[in-house]
Length: 256
Image (cartoon, rainbow, N blue to C red; front, top):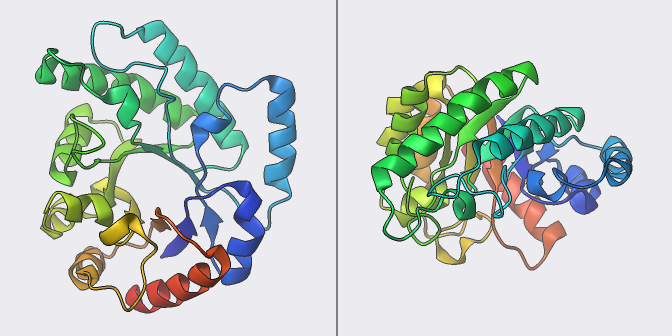
């Protein structure tokens, strides 16, 4: 299993020294900058000791994906530009969380909103394929999103979209927040599960062996399906260098 951290290129050297395989920065930080600014970013990424194999935050909050203000032409244009840039920076996986973009407006139909997101993903799938990328649907806890809150809902959506470049992400933190069983990992299997996130439930901190958590069931489910993809830490830290070393030692042991 490849291990990474959701962080910026500024931390890539520290992360690499700790033994991680990649970083996972935010795509919306580079997706709409000027070509000149992007050229500088490209140089920064090229100089990193490890690659940005995954990106999160596919959409900025300014792009609506649900509700009466969806601009399909703008969404398509954004996807073409953003995914091309992601691939140019070395990405293989793009995380679709973007709770601000997909949040259902008050009074708007939940079913219609889900149809809108499914339609967007049907557009995104072929664009992702053109760029050799896989987009993974990230379920978010109810405090952050009101549309796709469980891995079961994410799996159902990915299955309904039916495109090989649209798959599922499972996040330990969000699953625990929603009291969702790791059994969903076995249901999804390797055919649909393409990326994972992890953080401690309490405080959304980086995982440690001393945490009072249910990591064992999560990792057992991943082992049962033979998952050997990527696992990114997505959480808070007060000491990047020390926590990076402690967390990777724990994760390497847990995923053996």
